[in-house]
Amino acid sequence: MRHLSRRLLAFALFVSPGVLPAQNAAKFDVATIKPSSAASGPDSGITTRHGRLSAKNVTLRRCMVGAYEISPQQIAGGPAWLDSARFDIEAKAAEGPESDRADLEAMLAQLLAERFQLKFHIEQRPTQVYVLEPLPGGTKLKPDDTGEASTNTSSSNTRITVQVTHATMDGFAKRLSRSMDHPVVNQTNLSGTYRFTLQWTPERAQLSEAAGSENISIFTAIQEQLGLRLRSAKVPVETYVIDSATGPSDN
Image: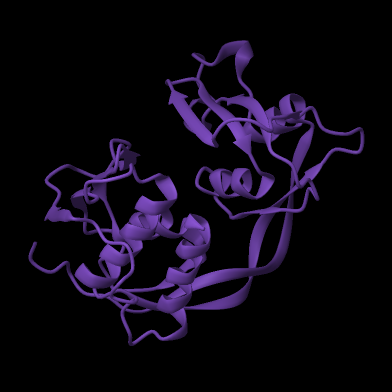
């Protein structure tokens, strides 16, 4: 039901661009938005934990990526400062049962609509994507039917490691979309949930001597470690077209 509620919230936002989400939609109990004093760079992102959301040095585009689980390339239009103005956001859900990540993402969508007056609609647009599909010989994925879905990412100068539990392939494709230069579309036809670890060399390090013999691209890693592949294609993809947005209102 939590995921259904989240999709309904997104539906309300794009079907009636001039209307804010329903007033009884989940909201943060307390939220502050301030201009960030940090320079653009790798030290930015959104974390969620124990009913709290913390966004450091983020743009409005990055906030939309987090709120709607889409890739940056699925966002079109918007104000001139969409990728330049940066913000720090601290938000806390009301006391009570701990909110999971999907709840907090839905609350972030609500916050963007209220504080940034964000309005958009969704179009299907032909887009260059990576299609995620099994290799002819089959996958190396291990079924994981117990526990909660989680994704833990760690990184160094020469290695990115993603540990995934209880993941659907749709969810994995969305996670990959955040790390790729094009959206990732799931066409594996795999309906179960899986546990796996994926390791690759970040693109910035692939040409350096530090990576050495362990240099491996994300494309090779997905094939060798998961038995899947990414194939380039052009297909219709949901594109979030921004109709209007303003600077954040006072806290």
